[in-house]
Image 1 (tube, one colour):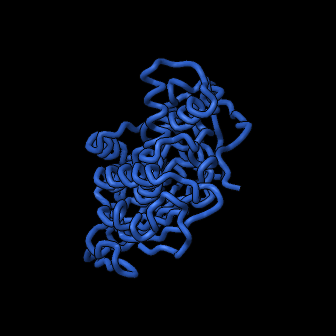
Image 2 (tube, helix red, strand yellow):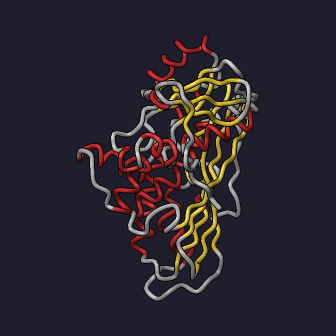
Image 3 (cartoon, helix red, strand yellow):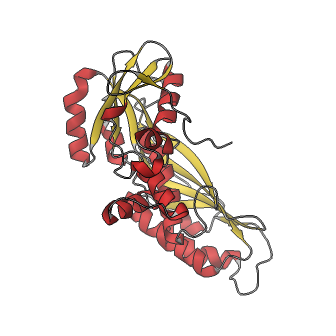
Length: 328
């Protein structure tokens, strides 16, 4: 892990000391205690490497009031969720941090603690990265590295007419958690509210389920931009139409604070797996979900055509006012 030479604010440890104190203890095999210019990895025989990266910015992707440990856990989890969608297992990660000059060292210490706890939960380790100071907002980028049996990666382009559509978990919890924290939205039981906040701050990448789906799913994506938006990505890559039966979607019990089920399927930040599969694979898919201890629901079907067709309980098409999160 390298550091750019910048003047540190008074009262904060220099960048090399920050790395040694907080991040070197997180280093895995091949990272050499973060003392070299780069890490060295040996891929497992018969496997291909899988890489993904996501950046998050304070005030855009997380709230400035979010605890540092939660920010770290979410940063790692959202990247590992991409690996899960590819059917890959995590190996390690690289992290780049742009710390505001007025950021307290206690925040960095909390971030490192959260990162360490999260990497232990997901069986990955830090392999390197970079750290700089900035006059702008806190910006964090993480590159997750995984591996998958050669030729076995799940893609977005394999859905075919006749396939069933499934989603794991519950949709809208992440969006509801954000509304509770940002807008102090009312409603729901205390347990539902706590669950939603936890799902927003600390999503769970479905790594075990993703690996189990390698031989069962025809296409897969993680739900980050919103269920409908990500169905649209599958549709575009597979050149098919995704027909969504709205009443079958497992939406959060707090959906009213999102505008109902239609708001929940557009909210994003769920990090569940959305996938398609042949009908004859149903029993094996349900068994895989039980083994992974993750609930799944069949929510629609794939047909000829393009785009996403949302149906109400009577089978009538519904127009969604907005289709999900956009980065620009």
